[in-house]
Amino acid sequence: GQQVMQIPQYQHVQEGEDFTTYCNSSTTLSNIQWYKQRPGGHPVFLIQLVKSGEVKKQKRLTFQFGEAKKNSSLHITATQTTDVGTYFCAAKILRSNDYKLSFGAGTTVTVRA
Amino acid sequence: EPEVTQTPSHQVTQMGQEVILRCVPISNHLYFYWYRQILGQKVEFLVSFYNNEISEKSEIFDDQFSVERPDGSNFTLKIRSTKLEDSAMYFCASTRAAAYEQYFGPGTRLTVT
Image 1: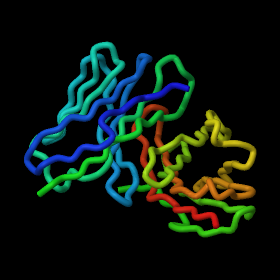
Image 2: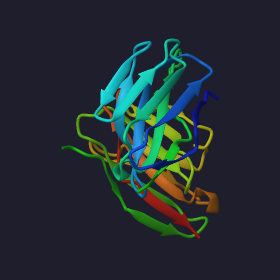
Image 3: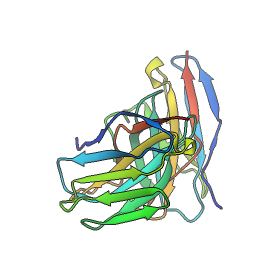
């Protein structure tokens, strides 16, 4: 089936540094959503991107949707300990009648103080 | 703020037994979902439900699984004869429209012994 690939699987970051996680699909996506799951918690919606080349910011988080709508990225600046968790991208695949989200494997972020 | 609720938070059952996991979606939402997450792995789609019928299901959702919306508020997932490999966290989610953000419940941890 359709898959969304996410890299890296793990990201160990020094507090205060920046990092980026990437999400890639071989097919065109109608939209992409990002979720955060804290350790022991449930996925919480962060953002949805719909338009080609769209960029959205939430404080230190910058989300981008590729021009071809086949990839997306999440960039976090000045990482804090509160950023710890797993970040998932999730996509509804274009030209599908699916009413589901196809989740990437997630990037698990740990922060060194 | 409205939220999705799930009961129980933890269910322990013996292999071969039936279990019913319960969810109360957000009241004005129309689309309902079940996902599972095996420990340390990604979130996997099981089934989506709209207009009182299944709209999409994954290969994981075999004949042992069923869903029901018995009244105007509850949404249940039944596993008829549990297997060891059914041990996972099961998340319910709801959304007011397909491809909008999904709101996840806190999950039910199912342990099959």
